[in-house]
Amino acid sequence: MNLFAISCLITAILTAILGLLTLLKNPRDKINQSWFLVSVGVFLWTIGLFGTVIVGSKESALFWQRILYIGTILIPILFFRFCSILLKRGRRERIIFYFGCILAIIFLILLFSKYFIVITQERTNLGYWPVKTGFLYWPFLLYFAFYVIYSVILLKIISKKNSGIYQKQIQFVYYAALIGFVGGSTNFLLDFNLNIYPSGNFFVSFYVVMVAYAVFKYHLMNIKLIATEILTGLVSLILLVDLLLSDNLPFILLKSGILIVFVYLGISLVRNVLKEVKQREQMEVMAKEVQKAYEVEKAAKEEVEKLTEAKTQFIMATQHHLRTPLTSIIGYLDLLFGGTYGKVPPKIKETLLKFQVSTKRLIRVVNALLDISQFQMGKRVVALEPNIDFESLIKEVMEELSFEVKMRGLYLKYEKIGQVPAIKADSEKLKVALFNIIDNAIKYTKQGGIIVNLKQAGKLVQLSVKDTGIGVDPKQANKLFKEAFARGDEAKKVYGFGSGIGVYVTGHIIRAHNGRIWAESEGKGKGSTFFIELPIG
Image 1 (tube, rainbow, N blue to C red):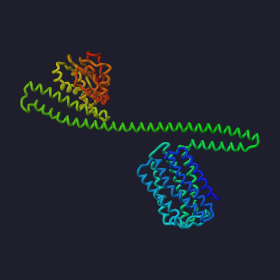
Image 2: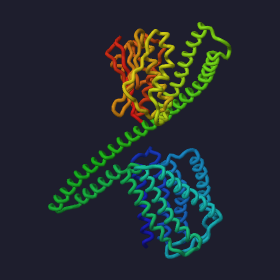
Image 3: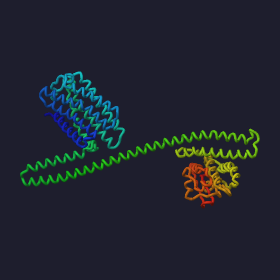
Image 4: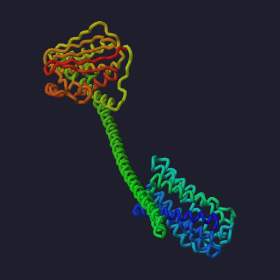
């Protein structure tokens, strides 16, 4: 028996053992089932190759050659099926598999005819090989090449798309398949009358070793436990038989001690492996749960993003459709007040002024809704510019609110302590913030009035708006600038049409100016003071 025959026999035995261990571990698992079938194909091929090499007649060689080719026909389609299941491929791979099965059945039926192998002859001191093949041999080679290459490419693509132990498992199967198929394919050279020694066949043994390493190192097909149990039991049986065959008392005692120690160590080993397998299974379950939770969270996040985008689009569309007619109304009111349509009687003018105030307030609400959406999406709403006169902005807002102050019978006073330097600000957005704060003070003050104070405080400009209104509950004061639609309980009673949007937007605007805003109050009915601090620019 030469070295080539020995390598074939070793590969056949190792393949059979590995295949059986895989099936025994979990007979119902599709991956284990498919790998067992691949092992059957490889076993038939290697044992057929072994028989071809050792026999001494053409008739016997032809018989073993046909056993060999049964395995060769089965290997590519069964390996493709194994890869499809391992990689969880879909409908396209199933169709390709069924088509391959039809081809394999045709080749198996015609294998025993003259259309496959015609004549065998002794070659290269390796027994008898085909020297004349039938016309079906070329279609068979195309079939073999297609399914093997497709399988290897699938393994490579999926390996790149994954990570961790799963990637390692696929990588070892990929390299094992590459080495095994490239090495084994050198046997085809002799079928084409090329007198070349098929040395690549020795590499097929590496295929078995690499798959075995993937099994035990990276838990491919989970057969580590059953392999340990079988190995422990087999060695224990050998030691027991050896003990029973001994007739010398000292040797009996020695071998009994060895057997007891080995059984004890074997049981401990099996327990440790069992514990490891259970821990790994628990970790796999946890990993799947974490992955499932991640997918749920990811889907929820995507849904929230879609809803946020839809909300933003809705608010922008609403703002556009509302602001356009409202702006037109303001324009016509300005024309009326300017005398374009003649002189307006005092009573009508007073009513129109109220109408103008309400319309402007509605425009601000519409703008505030869009600002909220922009702030929540993290978009930059404020564009800071240097040398902005803070005092001028305050006076403009006070002038705009003077009519409402007069209507309510309140006072609105402005005080400035010393010189106040210019600041860096977005004048339009800052006016919105100032309007919201002063307007709120007016709305929630029944008697008395509001004092607006401006001064420099170190490197900051500080504005305070103090009113004699309903006051703010200290517990609710912090929520006003951080939560949309947040309003105090007393505020809801005094002014039922308020929304809480203005103060919330104001908080965002001031923070976008790198400033600070807060409210202070001694309690219910004792008024409140809103403070704004902005850096000097």
